Length: 116
Image 1 (cartoon, rainbow, N blue to C red):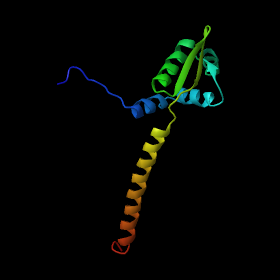
Image 2 (image 1 turned 30 degrees about the vertical axis):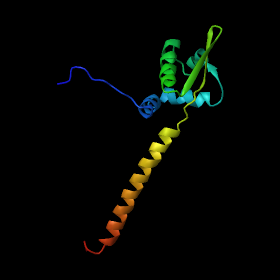
Image 3 (image 1 turned 180 degrees about the vertical axis):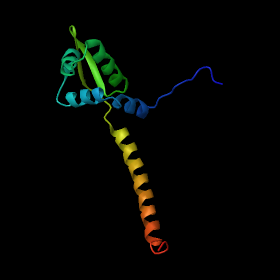
Image 4 (image 1 turned 90 degrees about the horizontal axis):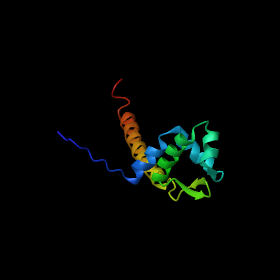
């Protein structure tokens, strides 16, 4: 039995983990319209500063958000990683599912008369 589990996350795992929360998706949507301070984001989501900082930190780890301290204010903007990797994975998965459905449709069509 393993006493210690080592977790290694790929960039895709980190991105999907960050996107798994509705608040974090909302933060990204808000930042699409321009930069915002953590306190502005917190008030927009009716959340404490500490709670918002935790969400922003997760988005930063996934490189979906960048922050910069300007005086006493921490400003947030969209990060360098766009969702290209996640979109590519979803597209390949969708392609696999569509191919399976096409094969199922062809099978059903070939065997349409056999079950009557």
